[in-house]
Image 1 (cartoon, rainbow over the protein chains, first blue to last red):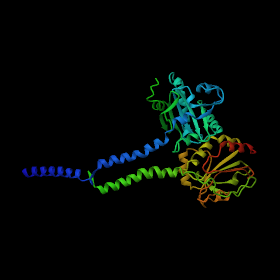
Image 2 (image 1 turned 180 degrees about the vertical axis):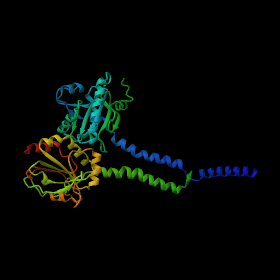
Image 3 (image 1 turned 60 degrees about the horizontal axis):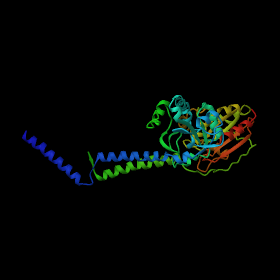
Image 4 (image 1 turned 135 degrees about the vertical axis):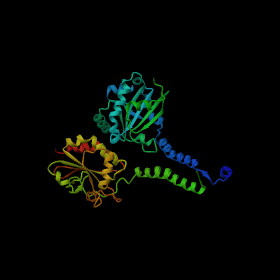
Length: 216
Length: 196
């Protein structure tokens, strides 16, 4: 019995001594530290990717588009009846921009849900006044945009970005669809949130992308 | 649990390679190879020529020949350079939306790539349902692309469109800049010129 107690005490002492030695020895690193480093390194490329997809809101706000020919859409965006307009001129607290392509199969599949997003926004008494939704077809011509609009019966304004001006604003390829919530501050637009990929569920998408804006 | 310094350095090196190099750089370079030489072949055909016949395996398992459409339908051949590349992965899904333009012109669309059937099967599955046949010009490698004068020096084909009328005569050729999407309206315009 006594021998056993002595053995346990001896093990404890050895263990403490070993831990003390480890502290002094820079060559010994605990597995927890290695795991923490691993997680940090895993996050690095993700952070880089997110940064790559963040757009310059000033440049985006400065983009000019032709005023839509449809009178309802002109009223929706608060534009004049002809000419061009800038996104910063749209009288809304929040501008929700979908970057899509007529050619993108994910955008095609997601089109009915994005239509649902528009419908929910329009039916909500508060959001219908404060939020505007538009689509920008990256690399698409007016003809291609029109094919997409007719195919999916899109009611909100869609604009062509034939020369891929949006793509030229960022170093990484823009994935489609990408949704950007832009908050209007004074005369500028500020990126509030970026959602990469399909909306999947209209109500959850709206809740998520407008979260933190205190619109209601 | 503890590991020695040498082991740690080894583990960190593997992790660094996996995270920083394999994931970000390699996959990025594969998916977005950057600007390629716009055109890398010598077109031997011209509008008014008879389109060379071919027979190729399709994804459905059938063999498809160009001549089977003689006297029945106009044909559009859409050659794309390679599976899983950025522009190609959108061009054909775009033609899903344009299906009515083809039907209105009594035109059959045939998608052709130099990839083998299993690769095309996986790729087309990822793109969703395509309404037109996809043909493999894998073996003899790129033989059909070569007969149309659009096989590039690296074994891929050009991004090219050939519009062929019901009599087998080529009515329109667009060997496009490989980096860019052929504009849909140009193809629709040519389709509208075809006798039905």
